[in-house]
Structure formats: C-alpha cells, structure tokens
Image: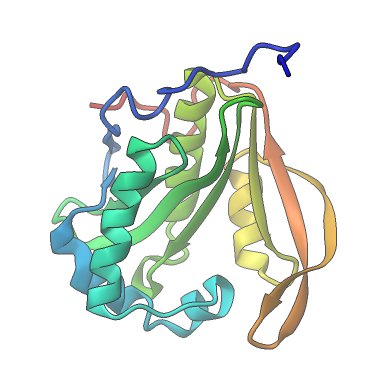
Length: 199
C-alpha cells in the first residue's frame, strides 16, 4: 500500500557520505579502526561499562564488532565512533543505533574509560555528534539509560537532551530489571561546547 507521508530522510543519508571525523581542541571523534580492537576489548573489562552496557568483549569479538559498525554505516542503520585524545589513546565511545530514516530518529549511546571520567569527554562527544545529526536533518534523537545510572543522566542533560519520561522495568541488567530514563533532543540549538566542523 502507498505511504501517504514522504520519508523524513532519504535512503543513503548516512551511507552516501564518508563517516565524519570531528576534531575538537583535545579530542578526536573518529570511526573505529581494526587496530582499535585491543583497546576496545580492554575497555569492556571495566566493571562500570559491563554493568550498564551488559556485555564484555574479547579481542576477537571486538574485531567483529568494529567490522559490524562499518557495515551498519554502509546500510544506514547505525554508526559508531571512537573518542581519542591527541595521542590517539582511547577515551570513550559514542554511537547511534535504531536509525529510522522514515521518521528521522536515532538513539545515541556512549561510555568512557575509567581514566577519562569526570573530564567532560562524553558530554563533548555526544553534543557534537548530536549537533551534526540534527544539522543533517534528523528530527528526533534519544538517549536511554538506567535511572540509577546518574553519571549518564548528567551527560544527557549537559549535552542538551531533555528528560522526556521513564520507561518502567524496561531493561534487564545483571542485577535485575531497571527503569529507564528517556532523554530527547530535537532542534539544532546553535554552537555548543563542541560545535566544530567535521573533516
């Protein structure tokens, strides 16, 4: 049956362009590389990342994950970036999943390694990627996290996502079912703390 509403974004919105690299003052947000597999696997040894992202990764699994991330970009279903410092040391990750081009929606996720926490790394990365997506034409961006993950809630607020509501008993973690906060960001809000141009 025919659609009565044109898609918000056309097919190829992601895949027709190279995945961008964002260079900030002390950070670079870039696509993952096969050579990042050891650092990615090491990041998932961290108890906090395992707690909130509910997984661990071997180096072999990390290599597969990096390959899958590239395929997701090439098929318009997601994108993943490594957040690194000026020495190319891994500080964190920001990514999009659940991309719906018809409705112009995507969900952002993120984490930082223990040594990078408390430095605003996640906020800068999330704000920059979100601003780029909105400039690209996305209508609605979401962040979802466990209500008890207070640090993630702070990142969402500082990255200019508004708390929209709570999904009750919506995600199963190792310690049981968690209520989940849903944060949203809609319109480009102008230059923020990390609003530089991609290269």
